[in-house]
Image (cartoon, rainbow, N blue to C red; front, side, top):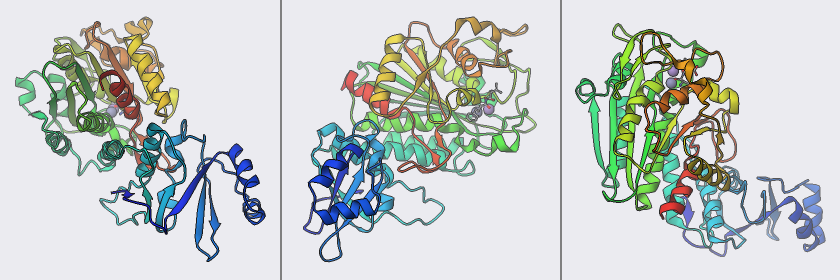
Length: 460
Ligand code: BES
Ligand code: MN
Ligand code: ZN
């Protein structure tokens, strides 16, 4: 796919250099080259590229600015701009990296080759990279495929990715790993007791669904992933203004993360019993749409008064989390594009992590930092629980306070997980508002590289 099999005599070396390392490099090179570097004002800032001319007017070498000499830290994105930048040709990394870092560098290149070209012809990168020495090709491909799946699912417009299409995509991915898939659709959600998923999704043209994937040995440690799959969020009767609705095809971004992560876990054959639960709906407007102040039944048996139909994600997640907790897994991790408030707090690049277990939270945060896939912990603040009280139902779906919306949403979800099951809730953006090297504008994987690293350490 993205990598060339072997180096040829015509292959062009890429020398990674830090800003500090450039000075040494200049000292050890010829006067002409030193002058060239100075003349072109190449400073080896991360991602910057300098071409060194050969005697016959060819490119003899590429200098690449990197954030650290062993491609750690910011490393993953250091090479990511190259596929779009380098002229046609075969290149190799002229540095020996330890296995893990070589793999990360190669993954950056692979992610830089991603194009969402379903609706528009786009030039494919013509530069090829010889797989860096020590890099684990299978690992690079499984992560690039998982992340590519996340991006494709989010980028696909709602017209082509409704609940039925999302279920189809989940089935395709699951079947490629011989996982078991069960999809409960439409009225079946009522008979099988997923009343909230049904209530939120019933007004849409495509029926709401609960996608349930299981894989792995029955007696292996249980890991359950849950993803918010709102294929389009109009806000419902509490309709969103146009500017807020514009990007709501991405409201299944949580579902996309768990499907991409599930691919990575299953492809790597991690010795876990994996379960993936995705409530898939469209929050649409029609005569049978749910209303503000409706009182919904939930799978758990708690009644919920709807404060705002635009707080739909927590409703569908409540039923999915109840089911997730029912077989007592070792951990539950949910991903959801749940609140604007989490974005106000942390911006679009840093997902908010809520967790009822400090050891799990610490493992998630440290692995996120190590893999340059950050998250930031926010509190399940008990003092705000009373904001969710309702006079007519067990709880309200929305907080009565104007602020702290990401916390009240997380506290709402907490009602549906058992306190003795380690549970992490990740409230994320799942989208790049603008392009950076290797990270085009559009759908993005967030948090799953770090979680995959954690699971590999723990179970691998
Ligand atoms: N999907 C949105 C949250 C969202 C908005 C995520 C923008 C990322 C970017 C969610 O369903 C929603 O509408 N939440 C409301 C909740 C409110 C009505 C309590 C919000 O955040 O405003
Ligand atoms: Mn909403
Ligand atoms: Zn939503």
